[in-house]
Length: 73
Image (cartoon, rainbow, N blue to C red):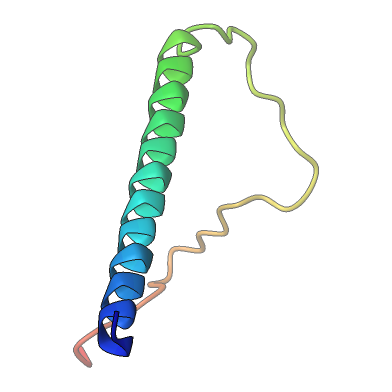
């Protein structure tokens, strides 16, 4: 077997391995996303407690002035 043929076989083997790893990773990510979706749908109405206030500054500091301008007008 020539060096060229060995190289082509090696490239084919590496490419096949990369494809297999990519498919496995895609299936794993899809499985996790599906499980998360099922869990989220199951827990959608589970919480009946009111959210609690947190210490710290208020998120809204609206002073009535414009916050952003565009177009120079």
